[in-house]
Amino acid sequence: MQKAKVYFIKEITPENIIKAYNAVGKKLIGNVAIKMHSGEKGNQNYLRPEFVKDVVNYVSGTVIECNTAYEGARNTTKKHKKLIEEHGWNKYFPFDLLDEEGPDMELDIPNGKILKKNFVGKNLSKYDSLLVISHFKGHAMGGYGGALKQLSIGCASSKGKTLIHTAGKVDDQTKLFDNLPKQDSFLEAMADAAESVVNYFNGNAIYINIMKNISVDCDCDANASAPCMKDVGILASLDPIAIDQACLDLVYNSKDPGKDALIKRIESLHGVHTIEAASDLGFGTRKYELIKINNENL
Image (cartoon, rainbow, N blue to C red):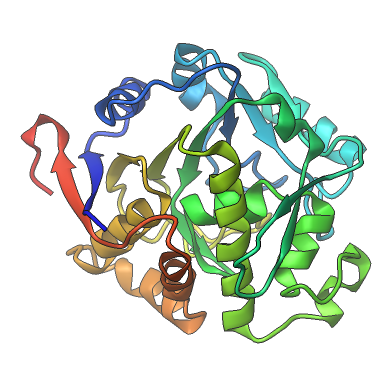
């Protein structure tokens, strides 16, 4: 497989998100879904709607999200819609809670390592193409969160999230924490679910990772730690595996001493294995060329 192109721009601004989007040289067609994280109530690190409104409107997209599988302000449609309003997600552009009501949409994963089916919000069927805007940071279960997490856990319904987190054992969120599997099985289930969404959009997808407010914790954590590293930049690619690998490499190669805390989180949970498993499935590559927009120095 040829090296994927990953575009990088150091200065993090709304205008440069659009510049990164255009750099990949692809135009998203039809009804565009934009997958983002709505941010748990109390979280201070998530990307704000004001920050992304320009790119959302630039592609005439609809921001999409799904309910969670754990207790909090986003695990039921009623609570999640209230938080969406509080966080201002429906202020500047359309917002679609994909699994607001059932039944879920089923995506087959014939060659999945762990899962053979993925359950996503049924409204995903309304969209022709996908823009995944990921806030790259650590994660308390996956080690890190980027494009692959957004494709898998992010697009999955509550039922689908439970199935991923339990590596296919159960789909009832009330039984999630009683059925947690071996760590690598969970990470492989994430890779399986990510592949199903990539295959569904059949190449009509672009991935943008924003390395800003980089905490060891995810935006799903109401009490997330403060950022441990300085902001790094914006990356864009047509390959979700390559863009996550590039982000990891930027962390490891950074001179920022704060990287140690993030690396410890990633390695303690074998976070790179999601990338390894996704690469084995073959819907992208870990080999990439990092192309600096504006000839910037890292």
